[in-house]
Length: 161
Image (cartoon, rainbow, N blue to C red):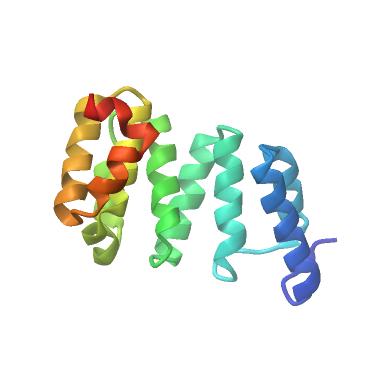
C-alpha cells in the first residue's frame, strides 16, 4: 500500500530517506522510497526532483527526459527540471536538444544565465569545448557575475585553457 501525501510525517520521512540514498549514490534505493509514496504530477514538485535525480543516477535517460519535460511544464518556476531535461536529452540525442529546452524555459530562467551556465558545464564535461564556450559566453553576457564562478568551476577548467 502506498503512503499518501496526506500523512505529512510519513511522506516527509520517505522523501528524506530518498534524498539520503541519492546523496550516497544509491539511486535504486531512492526510487524504492519514492515508489512507496503516492505522488503524481500536480501534487508536489519535490518527489519529482528526486525521481529525476535517481533516473539520472541510473542512466535512465529516456524516462528522465519524459518525466523532466512533463514536470518542467507543470512547474515552470522550478529551474531544476529544465536542467534535468537538458542533461538527459543530451544523452538521448547527443549534440542536440539544448535549444529545445532553452526555448521551453520561462523567460526569467532564460534571462538569468543559469540555464546557459549549466549547459556550458554539461558540454565541457562531454568534451564539446566549442559548444561549452558558446553557452558560457551567453551566460556571462546575461549575467556578468557568472564569469567569477565559471573561472573557479572545475567542470569548466578546460574551457578557459
